[in-house]
Each structure stands twice: as C-alpha cells, then as structure tokens.
Length: 368
Image (cartoon, rainbow, N blue to C red):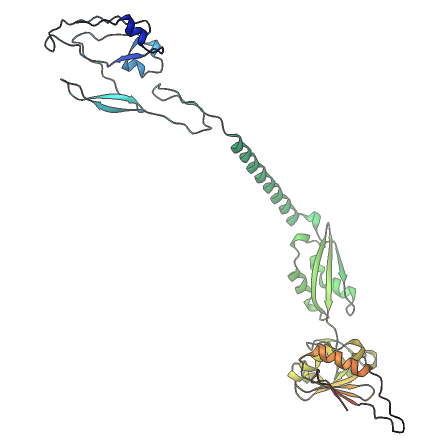
C-alpha cells in the first residue's frame, strides 16, 4: 500500500530542503515480507524535498552524480572506505550487520592553508594567523638579526688590525723612567685593543720593581692608557757603603751613597733584616706615618714586633709599640709634637721639655 504526501504535510515542513538518503544496496520489500504489492517506482515527492543516495552525499560534488535506484535482486556495489573515513556497524531487521562508511572529521591548525582530502572529500578552510602572533614573530626575527649584527661587529673588533695598539701612554709614575716602561710593554704594539688585558700588562711590568700594580684603559682606535701605582720607599737600609731604598714589603727600589738625599729614616740590621717580623713591623709603622712626622725621623729600631721605637732627628724618641691602631697613634703623636712648650709659673724654673713620647696606648699617651 503506497502512502501519499498531503499538501498540508508539505506546507508544514520547514523551509530548508531536507535530504532523504537511501542506503546503497538496500533491498526493496518483497511479497514474503509483506502482503502489499512491491512497487519499484520512486515515489513522487514535493518540490522542496530532494532525494540523494547516501554514497553520493559523501562525495565532494553530489550534484555531479546521477540519481539511481537499485533494481530488485541487483547486487549491491562494494564501497571501500577511504583513509579519512571510518565505519560504524549498522543493524537492520532481517539482515546481517553491515559497515557504513562515515566521513572522518578533519581539523587544520590556524595558519595552515586549506587542503583537499586525499580521497576527494570535503575541503578544510584555513584561518588567518592572529595579529599578535605575527607581530611577535616579527619582533623575534628583528632581535635575532640585531644579535647577529652585534656578534659580527664584536668579532671584527676582536681580530681586526684596525684597532691595533700603536701608542702606549703611562700615568702616575715618579720613580721609574718612561723608556723603561715602554721597553717592558713593547710586545703589546700591534695587538688589537680588545685583546689586551690587565693581567697581561701586569705580567709585562713585573720586571719593573718600582711598579706595584697597574690598570689599563683603552682609547680607540689605537691608544692604550696604563695607570701606574708605584711602590713607595719608606726607609733606608744600610748595605755596606750604600743605602738601599725599601718599601713596606722590603722590596729594594734603588740605592744611594748619601742618605741625606733620600730624607728617609734608617733601619739598622742590613739586608739580613728583610723578611723578619721586626722588619715588617717597622716598615708597616713607617708606611702609616704622616709626611710631617716622617721627615723628622732619623731611624727606626725594634727589639720585637711589639716594641717598635722611632728616633727623631732632634734627639727625641717615640715609643710606638706594635702595629695596632696605627692611624690613631699617628694622630696622637702629631698632636704631641706640635703642642706648645709648657711655661713655668712665676718664681719657678722652666719645666724640662719632653724627650720621650709614649703612644703605645694611644688613648692614654705619656710624655717624659
């Protein structure tokens, strides 16, 4: 018995055309399954309804294929699912379980172009790259480019002969001559400025005993400035007929035959005293004395590192003690030496001026 579609039913349908899909290879009802006569003709449908086979609906262009209805008894065509499809089991009354190909969903990341499925399936649209990602990519490329340029510039500066040392200028030297210093740093001439280091210059100047330390300053394109810190002589050390100029560490900086030309205190004991504890204690005291007191000293002696004594040129002496609180001791001693002489009371003899200044305890000095 055939059913007809009424006009009211058609009018009640939504405006959007719907598709009635028929499964390929479906067998029409037979007289054994129902008492109704078999009708192989296609039903007439509304103009708003289109009938498309299921296999055609899976195709990219369903309009290009012609509609066909399988004839009774005809064998169903075998449809091989594409790699982008998967099959799901479908059960039907009176038939075995079949596998129906189902279109596999394909997703594409943003920024990739649309690509057609290998089996001619649906196309996937590509979305444009977000603006912030494009800006970030541009910034990263710019930073990488600047880094490469800086690396090339530094490489050229490190090895380019354009920045080679041509002139070496010294600053701060008083005891050592300019020619001696220039001879010591001669190996640096022609070497690129960025490759010259403080340790290298210090090693080259190590042969000059008057130089205690040094630091360098590059002045492109080809000038190297060397700051010199010289050793300061603090005492004279008698060695036979000569007098050796020594610094706080006992390094011999020169010699003279007339001690009056050096204006430095004399340390007894000869060269054998260098390196001993008493010698180091005396030189440490002399290195911390103000220039006004140092110019009045005649000699320095020490029976032990804790018993350093200084003799002034006018016959007065100073009991210094050990090497502690040297700055405070120097201030107290300078105040005592510059203090006015005491005056006697009326009718009494003048007091004897102090000859010994004991500053071994600087907070409680004693004069006698």
